[in-house]
Length: 312
Image (cartoon, rainbow, N blue to C red; front, side, top):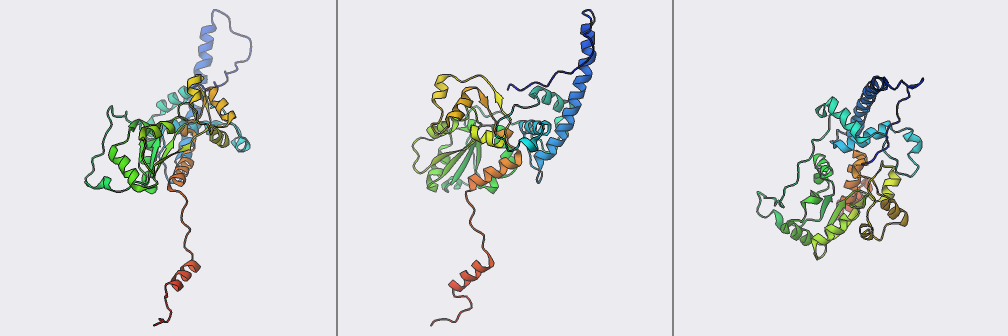
């Protein structure tokens, strides 16, 4: 990921002599590096507290990195409503060194790195032999395995009644596909980055499922307009080739396609953890049924004949 570099320190005065320039540079660079590391360490402490709120959420290292960038970003209160995708103010290697210096185990709520995917597709062995005989109305597939682990660690799969898988777990077990088909109108939600490779993942999931009647594949994002509306920090990588750009969804706006053509990308990890959990729950569960009030309850009792004289 290419990030904007921190500005070089200003030493002031005349430049050092050629013979002693290397020594002078060391005397300036080392204290400056310690200062930057100390500032980053304090920002990590604040970022970890924000990332875990509310209720002690668990978060990944990349989510902590983006939260640290938000802590160090100038004027978020003034720029929060302006659309755009600013570059991170902190380089990723600087953050990694500061995190290693303080110790990852000292950051409450930080999840360990995800384990590597199994080389062969794994089939879940259930203790109940009829587990796959039921219908599965929804399924969530995440491009990033660490994001899938974060959602599982925060029990999103239980609250949404929705299994959470990583994209490298595909293809799906045939029994799982049958459970989706059995539900009738099941939905496979795909959570991906706003990047040239991430945008094409929903189409890959749809092709991998094959002709399964009644199962639809829906993208939860991100797309470039989401990243701009949320002012997510974005990076810049190699520009994709014409063949890759030809596979972009037709629903993208021309400005979004141009943003991707420049090699820009925004990761799901850049979304604040609490907002990510709320959004995934809202989109996977669908609209909530209206709450019953006192008056609606009384109307329901009257309709069932409660406390009324029998007609016969």
